Amino acid sequence: MDKLYEKDLGGATYRSRDPIKNFTVKIKLQRLSASTIGFLGKPGSPGDENQEITSSVNQYGQTILENEELTVHWQQKFFSQREMEFYGFEPNCTSVLDYKYHAEVEHIKVGGRPNTRLFTYVDKDRFSVVEEAYVPMTTSVNEMPSHLSSRVTEVRRRKNANSSSTLQPWELNKGRSVSGMKLVEEKPTDEFTVNHHVLNTPVHVFIIMADLSPEGQLGSAEFERRLCTIEYDDNCVIRVSPDFTRSKPPYRIEEGGLSRDIWDFQVEHVSNVVSKMESRREGKVISELYRKHQTYLKGLVGESFEELPSGIFRLLAYGEILSAESFEYDDLHVEFFVDLPKNWSCDPGQLLSGCTHSSRTTLTGNTERAYFAQPFNYQLFFPLQEDQDTLDWPKIFLHVISSDTWGRRRTEGYGYFSLPTRPGCQRIVVQCWRPTGNEGYEAITSELNRFFIGGNPELEDISYAAIPNTFEGKHLSKYGVRTETGGSVTVQVNCIQQCKAFQENLSTAVSRKKLQSALQIARGQASKTAIHGVMDAYQRARKRMQLARENVPNQIRESAEKNAVEKLRGLTTQDKIKNILRKAEDEQTEAK
Image (cartoon, rainbow, N blue to C red; front, side, top):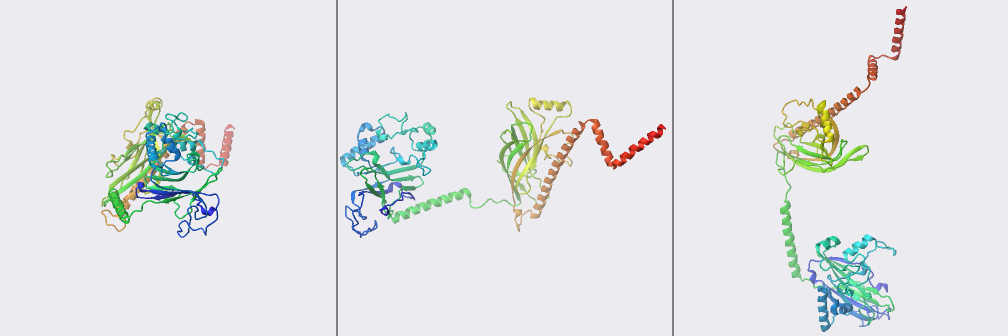
């Protein structure tokens, strides 16, 4: 017997370009006997026309006790016996839709009802399938819904969160509510939608139901069963659950209780078939639409890639200021800008300066570090010439500033780095320094101001941290500027270089050899800058060592100097003993 029915109740998904109003479904419902009375012959397939079937026995030898067919169009309303009784009594109506259904029921009472057990719920009805109220996550019978899943399910169905009653909308009188809240808000305001998180999904639902009540007891809500659910969204996707039967056996529903009725039903797609002429016309319209859309996209994007003119070198720098560490005060932010050398240019609307957000430091290991993750990107151009031998490289200057709740700002350090001359991703650590006051009273005053009221000596031109572009001499002297070592800023930069001279066998105004020599010179200048930075760090460390040495007591310092002199002279321990004995002999001779 199990082979005579379809067990798979899974749905199917379809896509149709035809308007959904043309969608039509036929439902066939039969009530069968609990057991067969014997086969009339060999069971044939559902579509076998040669098989002789009586009106009271199906092709499988089962007695057909009741039979009903109904052709349903999309969102076509058919009332059940219970709805006929509910909407037929006018005091039960509480909304415009209820009064509309009341008028239709009155018309059906006069003209006759086309259905008996089969009926539908349209998208406007206040209906929620009981078995879909909670979808279990496991196969355990002891699984209980969590608080979150209950809330989400109730929000989707627009029901009260604490509603556990079995009251149906037609059982509620006008103004009556459950737990002090209406089940359905007919005209929700914007504020209500935001506060209750109503999910407005563009999906339209159409449900075909059946009243499987025992014979003579139609209208009982407990015997209502869902046969088919049809969903349609704005993407022209149709979901049917369960799927159309086609050549498959019918679906089966077994009722418990004393009646032990067995029902089978079939879902057939009976929409009008589109004619060849209409299909051809529709395909032509769709192809024309896609062609216009493709033309529109080509107009936005273009058909070719951007091409650089000959003799133009483009540098793309995509970077990120990662963090700053080992500075004296907290609440740090970094101001930065790009210094373009002579003949370099950028897009007119591009900003060459920026600022990070303020960040508090956190202790990482033994280092106080503030994280920024501030991105930046620059697109720079340089016109190459035939006699190009040198190429100055752009620099990015950094100014680290600390601030507090009183609005006091302090300069924590200056630093700079040249954009990498080689393409690729590189991580750069920029060592920073800050200027201090002159010796004596001014140095003490500047430090007191820095501690109590904020503010300290600053550079009038931040490009002084490197070699300013306005400098035209051969030697730049920074002698006399008192500085103090600060922390460091970590920057990550990814550079891309583009120029037609990089291509082989290409005749341009600038030869590949000239460009390579210019890049090599620029890389040499960058390495010199790095060497100068190392030497400056060495000089600062040497100065700290000298200051520490000055604080050592004189006796210890003289002893250390004497030992160092003796080492330089190459005196051994034996030589020292001989010298002591010789001095003793000389003293004894003089005494005699």
